[in-house]
Amino acid sequence: MIRLFKHYVPHAVLLLGLIDFILMYFASDFAWLLRAHQIGMNPGPFIVRFWPSLGFAVTIQTAMIAVGVYGSDALRSMRYAAARLLVAVGLAVVGLAFLNFVFGGQTFWRSTLAYSMGLAIVLPLLSRLLVGRVLGAEEFRRRILVLGAGHRADRLRQLADKPESGCVIVGFVAMTEATPVIETAISRRSIGNLTKHVEVLGASEVVLALEERRRALPLSDLLRIKTTGVHVNEFASFMERETGRVDLDTVNPSWLIFSDGFSSGRAISSAAKRVFDIAASSLLLVISAPLIVLFAVLVKLDSPGPAFFRQRRVGLYGEPFDVIKLRSMRADAEANGAQWAQKDDPRVTRLGSFIRKTRIDELPQTWSVLKGEMSFVGPRPERPEFVSDLEEHLAYYAERHMVKPGITGWAQINYPYGASIEDSRHKLEYDLYYAKNYTPFLDLLILLQTLRVVLWREGAR
Image (cartoon, rainbow, N blue to C red; front, side, top):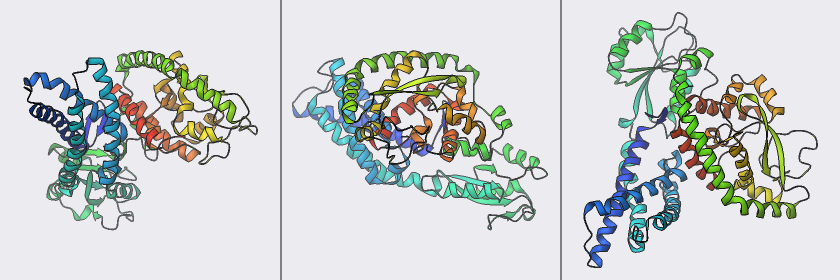
């Protein structure tokens, strides 16, 4: 994987994205040349075509990222890829129409766009047929040697067995005399030279997955392996990189303290984030005001009770604040006290089901963003009634309050929903990853992929 602004991106995704970008640029430039030839017009110098073609490529690829064209399902299935490409092209048409309005009517000709859009669907599908198979081949996956044969090693095996995995495990080494969970593991005693063993297997990375490190940590071997140019990693860091979350089963305070992350140099990024929040929330409130008023009236007509409801939540540094949302449940939904949301929750009204799926009920929360109590991106704020219980059952839960809560977040786009302590535990792993690795780049990625969550009804309820 390649680390971009503290966030890991698989090599295959990055390479495929680069190929797609080149193809999108080619599609636009070719369409321009083709249309100019048809009408007998001079296509003009390269620089005249460069900016429109670049704008086309950037717009198309932004839409592709937003709808999940580079997600694991779309990378494995041509059917998924084709469906999401069609949606991406549809969204890009809207974006390009806006650019055409801003920069003038001659920026994107309708006839040129028709050719470009056709190529924008066909070329990426062809590239996936040709390049996708090559990138998925075992020869292009990272070769991992695991030191350990217990439950942690077995978790790595399960992770590598997933179709979307970018690595292949070439061997397991049992470092202790304990009964191995991985039956095919080779005993350390039967390997004369561990460095040579790594070289023979062609491993590009060694992952330390020991259940107990005392008297089992092979420091001298790891040092020799490291000096040969092979990457040496430990279990928690490897899991964070491969899964995009902090693994609570194995993480400890020393790892959180000494690992890269929670940088104090984010003051400028935080200031930029606040400027964005103010500008975007102001604009969104103005644009969405008619929609909020319309659905407020519909909510009143649909079921008895107020159109809006306030709910106490826990924010930055554990400070409480009130969020405002369009009511999507019956007015007496919590007559017996606070309850977890459920799948197909019977308390949700007819209209409430729609506004929850489309996230329209979240629009009034932009007022909390404008006031500075929330951000557009961050961990979802939880209710005080649940926080005390979650902090008691889940280690490091309080650390998620070290960043400002958000309307959308890393957990929301990666985990289906949070309706229990176990679900909250999984969401916490993603929240800690976000708090640890926050950058504006990660915020942008989350904002774009929130559209995928809305379109395909994924993410938190």
